[in-house]
Length: 397
Image 1 (spheres, rainbow, N blue to C red):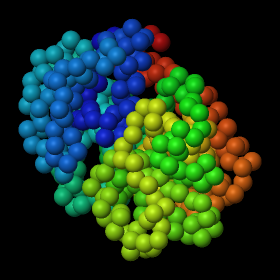
Image 2 (image 1 turned 180 degrees about the horizontal axis):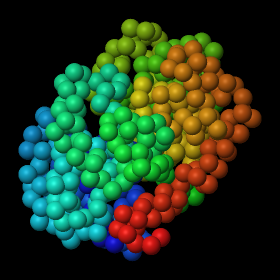
Image 3 (image 1 turned 120 degrees about the vertical axis):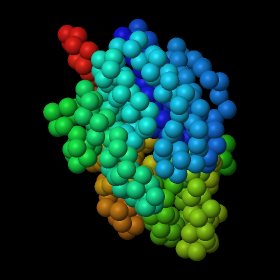
């Protein structure tokens, strides 16, 4: 099949959705399909990506179209690109199926218009973006979402052949914004397990960042953004340091406008803990895997999260996981880790239990690895997505 993936942004700094789209596209190419990604050149902080207009990543063609207003893209998630609209108008008829990622992308309205004209089926995968309001977003963004839904969103939902939800929670969210329940199919994210067949030796990350072998290491890996709940982790950490003398917190990820405020909150809470906290910035590939391998526990204290790939990565590295009950992946984590309320004492106690009990830590780590191997690896996801493409094309499965 000739497959078009459409996502408003395609920079690694955007985290899980970009990685998921890339890995899915790469494996589809390996299965003999032709895959093209349409995206814009937006980047974090009102900047643009310094990329060629067309580039190839492991046989996946990625085409970057100019976004004419980066402020609208950054602040209101409105990725306006006349170049992309023209390409969709001229080329959409050449594809067998279109897969839309994220929800409120003006590019998705372009696809809805011309897919209907050319009778090309499209699938929508919101990837956590369905709710009109979540976390602590501003009124401007909330209003822009309401307007998008009124002008474009209902048409996009109505004409989609299928709506892919990562969890039952996201299935409910589709229905709350007008999605047809009969079109919804739940397909969790997965990760390419082959990348974790041979894990790096323990100690390599610690050596690089001068962390002692006997230090207890708590890892947070993700965007440094208010919605990630890092402030809750800091409050729990300030209590844990009285219990563990050799405790370190490592915060890994790109600054998404919150780092300076976070440091200010730490100094206000307890300046003494600042020297126990390490910020590495974003790290990728094998360096990121080394961080998971050397961590005693991975913590994701988010205010809102749909299906974070970082949790799957921690599972693949046999690292125990703690998340809040506001994470959509909690139904998986509760089987092999800790799911806690959004409460600093509950979070603190869960982390403490893991750090104190090596037998429990190993049991949780092994359980997470087995869960990824059997249910949450990308081969399983690919099989389900490929069958979905065939179904909307009317091809026998």
